[in-house]
Length: 145
Image (cartoon, rainbow, N blue to C red):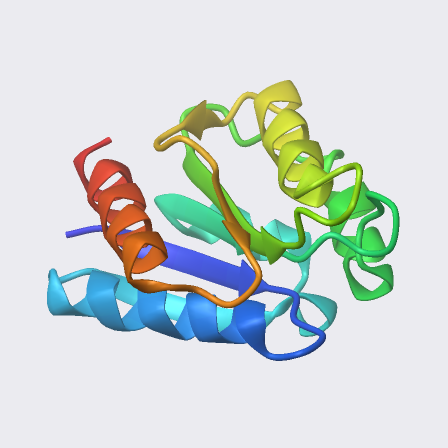
């Protein structure tokens, strides 16, 4: 079964909740999941896993979270050809650039040769039941990729 590295950035707890939900669901499907907070994670850790997942919030006006910048810059230096990835995160539709940090990570993974295993999931605010359905579909797509 899949060996997954799950990295998250969370300010108010929403994205940690998303990461916890994904970890629990993926493990219930037989995957091995190593979860860590983004500021405590070396991007090269992704080289040791079949699947890499980033869960991030979008800060202020479409910016990466401050604690994610070093990881993001290091990620862009890797060669992850053939590795599967997925990106999800909570943001607010009140902001002009809803979920743009998710798009930044998606583009970075593509630039370094990783294979997109699932469509990005952007959640407005706190995850609701329909969002959890989307996260399960996201996780299933990653497991099947």
